[in-house]
Image (cartoon, rainbow, N blue to C red):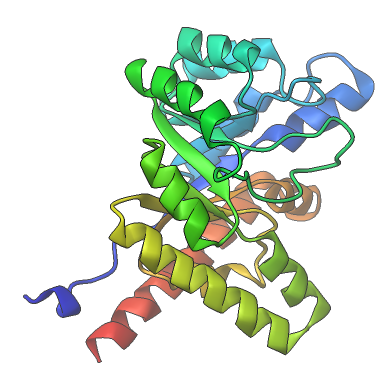
Length: 261
């Protein structure tokens, strides 16, 4: 079988459980439990769990990370800012992977990709220390070739492409911007893959926007959180994850059929 005839690689789903913790923290106490949500997510078809331990601890807590690392059978992806405190926590717990993200205390959510080009000298020792600890390192970046080059040169294993602008265009129904942003993501995925980087994507993906991203064969993992937790209010976490999993699988299968046609 030639390379052109091979099926696209399996597309993994990482479920971000941050906002389960947000709901818990709104009232205090231990309910709902992020570990229980993570376990349910795996049972529903998630391939891994993502959790962002922010400096201000607004949702996921240090105790959550300890419990997830100790009891979760599937890979844990720790999102973190490049700070000494977070590096120490990551090296101590040794999650499967760490995704370095930008972080501002006043933001409601991550507002864009990490500028690896401008932050190269600051970020390099963090990447080195994580790699030496046996942790896979991902850089959360905008779909820009320069960011892929910088991520590669700094020693990262993975780039996670920020899909937020594309998702906002889908919500707005702006066909021109959808095409433009999707093109940027497609080109970035191809370019980063050509550098030897593993390619992930995420931020803002919904049932309506996931298919076009899932069709891109270079992308091997999607990380989705807020939308799935929000949908769980209406139909349950199991249902929302199973539906997302089905949409991803259908889009990836169709991509393979189109490639072989």
